[in-house]
Amino acid sequence: MRYTRLTAAHDSAYSRGSVHAYLLHGEVPTLVDAPTSDAAFLDELEAALNAAGDGPLAQVIVTHAHPDHIDGAVAVHARWPATVFRKRAPLPQEDGIDWQVIEKEPMLAAGDSELWVLHTPGHAPDHSCLFDVHGGTLIGGDLAINGSTVAIPADYGGSLREYLQSLRAVLELQPRVILPSHGDPILQPASLLRGYLSHRLAREQQVLECLAAGIDTADAIVDRLYAATADALKPAARQNVIAHLRKLAEDGRVESAGEAWRLRST
Image (tube, helix red, strand yellow):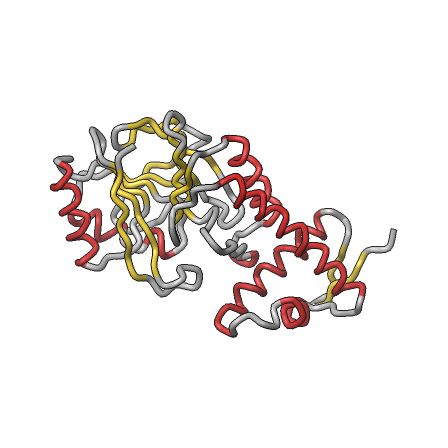
């Protein structure tokens, strides 16, 4: 799989200041994610197409609909109006683009390869990863970040249970490398993903210990568990805590009473 990584500045809540898109070179020139309408990004994309001899952009595949992955779709469409745009439902409405829905887990021609479009919800309900089965490269969207963990925005469609299932599903594929939307390539995916699973299980135990000690609201749990976290990151931490609490409720281990949470008696 031949590709060019394109990086755009972005100031959305989970972008960490910048986001990567991937231009896949070959018979079906494909852009994975359209993060910005900035003219400099579009010019860089056009230059990369020309340098590779690809011809016009044929396809855009959006991993999920968070702003730092889709904000540039309309501008990309305006410059390459014949491009096919694809993502999982729900599809954007009234943006002038004839979106094609990705259903189930198809194989799609992209660049010079056939990529397996995996449904990997958790960070977002419509999240997809793209897997080059033959080369072992996974374009990971926001499934994983080198050197950090991934936020689970529970109030905006995030699900910790689904995220853990997605991590396990990708682990089974044994990818050789993950190309993330933020940060450097992940060259030891199995180690990182197993670490994520261990981290989430440990955090779950910490949340249970907080409830046992009478620390019973999301904000109070954030103050206890994320005391050293920068204030700018506290909203994301709060979403993570809520995601843990909701999973524990689904497991029948806790219950809510308004803003407060408590352990369920057995």
